[in-house]
Amino acid sequence: MNRIHTVAATLPDYLQPTFSPPSTRTQLDAFAEAIGAPLPSDVRDFFAVHDAISAPDIHNGYFIGDTSVLSRSIQRGDFPVVNGAAIVFAIGSDGGGNAFVTLSGANGPVWNWRHDIGDFLLLSDTFLGFLARVADDFEAYSRGDDEWQFM
Image (cartoon, rainbow, N blue to C red; front, side, top):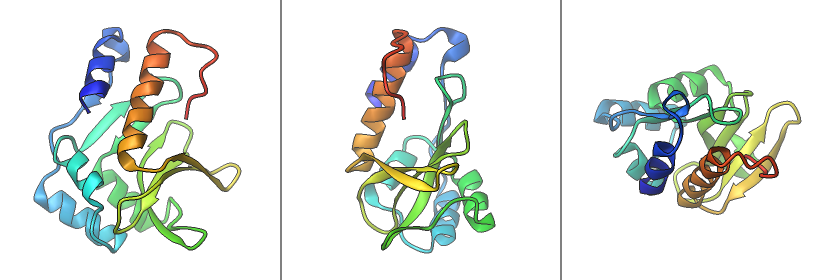
């Protein structure tokens, strides 16, 4: 998270992401109930720092967290709950309607569910690696790297 904050500070004010306060216990309980499993420890640790990161103006947009919004989306069935044999849940989305999903009940990989194609692209083997990739994308956007492959 420190790296994401540091990179975000290099962006012009109008592009800087917003970082919400930590999730409340009520929000976390409701989110765990919505996904039907305990939150993985890495995801819970993220929510202990911020309930959400909102970066609509970086590339296609990044929306990580916001347990209340994600709970409603899960209840509506907006995002897939399985990837092959793996039970997954959304931890965020981009500005194009694609979701970032991870394993339910255990730390594990993060995939990008591409709604227009209907497939899953592996982004990272871990949630912490996913956050590092978010920071990489923010850095590439900050330096105007047109060759960078964004998530």
